[in-house]
Amino acid sequence: ASVMPRKESLRGGVGAVGSAMAKYFHPNEHIHEKYPENFQTRRLENVTIIGDGTELVRQQQQRCYYCTVPGIDDVLHIVAKHFKVEQPPAIIFEEERLPTDASPNGSAVAPSLSDQVEESRRSLQDVERNVLSRQASAEDIAELRGRGIEVYDDDEPAPENSWAQPSVGEWFTPTICPRRANSNIFDHEGEWKGVTWDEIGNMSELDLFRMTFPEFFILKVIIPATNHRLATHMTLQEFYVWLGCNFFTACFPGIANLEDWW
Image (cartoon, rainbow, N blue to C red):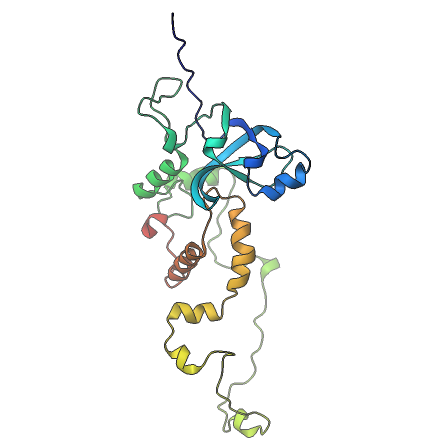
């Protein structure tokens, strides 16, 4: 008797469409709200995968798919093994690829978006040139001028944007200290509520910064709103690294070419 070959299961990737039991999707409050009566037995169809990553499910870090579910605005995630792919993606997730995978035209599987970004980052080249870059060619500028874009080199504002410099009055050197002359002003040593100066003296620069920064707002509002559309969620530590990079670059004069920052 002949044995029928086992049908190879479809693998996940961005754009793949499939189905899964509603009870396996997280956060489950969105499922409870949409299907309050039969969420335990209902199977959701036409679910689209938009990314993959690792999430804490049942007290374990597990690989998940991030999905959009018809009728639910929020992005949900589900453990990959609980999801049935019914329509294959254009590009399979890197973790699910096989060495024999090939695209329909017989070439190798196209690199993932993260691979393309990494390749651009390592190339030390701008993704796309523009006229503000030091590398803008004379041909680019000539083409723009050919479209009717004119350049005025007089460095003066347009008439509607011109303004008169306000008068700052007369400068003089004061002979008295206005604070000392005012008996209602007292010099008090500054203080922090609940923190002594001795404790502050032992703090790092980051700890001092966090004392003056609205970290609670970042944790409760900024990061959740950012993670709403991210496949891999951002942590508070990653947020501070991003913020530190912006602070660092702000310490230097502007550099037009992006490759100088890689």
